[in-house]
Amino acid sequence: MQNAYCAIIPAYNAEKKIGEVVSNLAKYLPNSPIVVINDGSTDFTNRIVQRYKVIYIEHTRNKGKGRALKSGFQIARAINSFYIFTLDADGQHDPRDVVTFQRDMNKKKLDMLIGSRMSNPTNMPLHRMLSNRLTSKLISWRINANVEDSQSGYRLICHNVLENLKLNSNRFEIESETIIKAADRGFKIGFTKIKSTYSTKNSNIKFIDIFCFIRLFVKSFLWKKRCVAQFG
Image 1: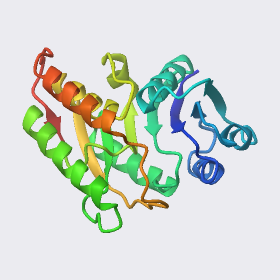
Image 2: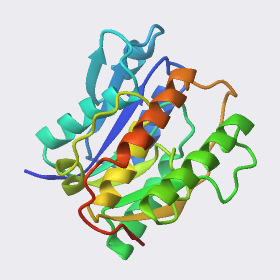
Image 3: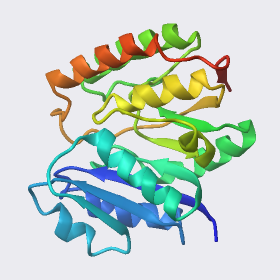
């Protein structure tokens, strides 16, 4: 039996918001599996998540957002999900937006839809806004198409995209890798406007993540490009 939708939430030290995110998401994705990957949290994320009806995966140590997402993608494939939502566990993303994602995905006949925060980034911490604008411009240049928000983790992805991409990233650069590889294979990618709420100015992104992105970006020019990018 195929699930029309499932949702994947990578979580690291998310005890303050994860319960709210899961409970609200369940309202807008009724009867759809929600997969939470506890990526080596040292707080009470595990206790809170297990109060809810979710598929729960726990990494015994912090392996990075990329590894957490890849664990979730494996589950999505195992439970035969057609569309896969990804969103963050810190309350930044509004679960009500899943309705907009579903509408735009079908209307534009897309393979991947990414939530764009950049139409109104006034509440985004300055360092995040600057890094996002820079990486988005670089990836736009790389694939010769306009990428509005390369770092957004709020996405809706068709299963055929994930089945045709070999994702190697283990940290935050996985979001850039997914865009580049999907574009290189001719999958149709689109953006939809979302609002984001930042409860803290702190970020889990470290200096090593900057290095990982630069390494990924340089290596991407060696990847085999099979098709022309399609954006809708």
